[in-house]
Image 1 (cartoon, rainbow, N blue to C red):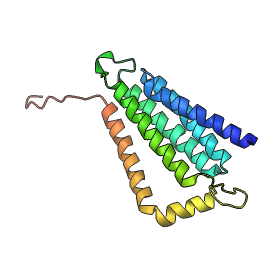
Image 2: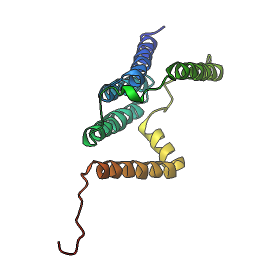
Image 3: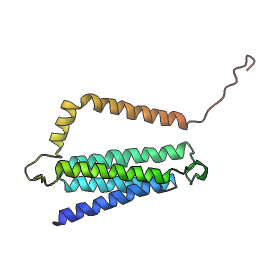
Image 4: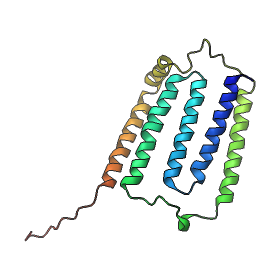
Length: 174
């Protein structure tokens, strides 16, 4: 194995481990911070695959915007950030079994579909800005715009939910 492959495996282990901590941590703020580690490890994997543009988009959009928006939403809505003991159910074992089954199916599918295939990154424009921009704006313009409107609506909704409610007395003598 080369050094790049070893580093890719290490980043993959960090990504999977921190992703497990995202869903098992009892505190929402800690979960969001583990999500930053997960997304950062994925950005490192993209860098190793010579997809620099996708790696920077991962860092700027997901780590820089989505996680920050999540943290601001937690702070502005005054949501409880500690463990909620009354809201957990006894379905953790079933959820773990289903998650393991889905993971096995996904790994089996990827290995069966791409087992033994090696992509040469020397001459491929796999993650370059030009090829990514051409793919997005030639074939994916409508989903790209719908996603931008969806994110804008989520931002406006978060702002609207975080504002305090003012009650106006609508009496005639006021």
